[in-house]
Length: 333
Length: 272
Ligand SMILES: Nc1ncnc2c1ncn2[C@@H]1O[C@H](COP(=O)(O)OP(=O)(O)O)[C@@H](O)[C@H]1O
Ligand SMILES: [Mg+2]
Ligand SMILES: [Zn+2]
Ligand SMILES: [Zn+2]
Image (tube, rainbow over all chains, first blue to last red):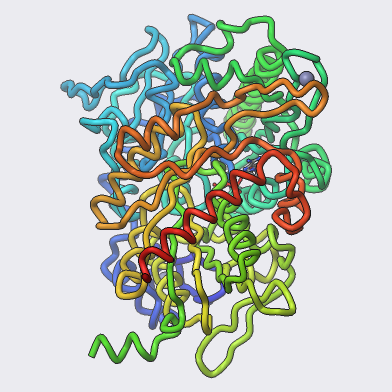
């Protein structure tokens, strides 16, 4: 499969959508040969049309990624969705595709909620009238249920989340992902092909152990042609609540996200300090932004959210301009 | 038949295999794997680490051998040794990449094939412990690893969590995974519990406190201890230094040494 190239082994893969998929000489011995040969990897046209129809109603899709886990992706996704939904005029959707470790339900205060079936598909669970949420967590019957699934089943569910959930008209679709660059990531990018993808926000912590994974994630974005909105550095420094001195718990030994962003020419959207209140608010399912409106972390989150909003508006403007130019040409020709 | 295969296998000289698991990423699985290996070496053991986190391998850097590569020998791949005495040996996809920033963008079947190869083809030689560091979750890598290792001396799993409810929730699912896969749980480690300010000694529970211990009690599995957030620990991991040797006075040291001791006690009981 083409997306899989670049590893230590299979080279010269014809690509999953090629007519040679699974049949080329290079496919001999590839573990995916069976899947490719059966055409299972190629998109089914009817399905693609259903996906397209559903995704046409989404104005901006924003993927939240990180190479490493535990850096604060879900926290950021949740706060981004809440921050955007503060504008009553905007319709926001939050989709959690971390199939094995869904944490969005808890962070949004929706633990124990179940998804309902309606005539037009699954209904998201609504936090506010203008903020709907979907997660595999809503499909599990107990908090101990483990989703022990291999790739293809996870991909199937992700497709269902995009195709069968009745999101309605949505201004922003925020997608929280698991760490890494594997099935979930390839699938979501593939399925979102039909949507207006604004791009990806990449979350990291300041230390090299985390940055080395983020560089891989950035390479992944380039490879699948996913625009990068920017990088958020989380857990940068901790201010002791007693003596107000700062400690670097996760030391930026190689210059942190700032240096990496300079080197790789991507924007740094901002830095969010470690604040014990953030984790507590998440555990209780409350919005940190409204629980601690005056904290430095909140103002940093707000700035970042605003920059993402501006990025989306800007992009929208450009997209319209392109369409306008195109039409103008048509008229002139 | 199976008996013969096992005798000839590359894992024949490995006495105990431990899996380090967690539902969530970034909770310190690789950290615990690394420090456990260093502590066991400190007690005179020979240790190997197999890193099956294919998308985010951190083990090579944590031992500062990220520029090494693996070589082929008659019996398979030669692991990377971190020292002259060959007391710690490592295998990771990190050693197979041409460029360290290469993204391994693989779907499940390909990851499974490489894991099988890692289990079958690495010439570990004689080891007291083989520690398997895993990616977060309960998916392809985990199923494949457990299935491939089942015929061998698979001792059980150590589950790592941070104290907050969101992370503990993921570990509850990991416990279910262990039960379904028939994998013994050696215990739960609560990592990043509490931070002692180096300026004023005030302890702040940045990621709250006690979630891991509570879960261990609730699930009826051993609790192996709390490892505090310790800037000296993260700094030594960044630089690939031997924390166990160099920082015996730091706040995380006693907890890490205690975890290793419990693993040693558990295995000596088993063999007597
Ligand atoms: N007790 C601790 N004190 C300070 N830093 C820690 C501690 N445990 C882990 N870290 C740091 O947290 C980061 C994530 O840990 P890591 O072991 O890579 O997690 P995982 O393998 O679960 O993704 C690393 O940078 C590590 O140095
Ligand atoms: Mg790791
Ligand atoms: Zn192929
Ligand atoms: Zn202090």
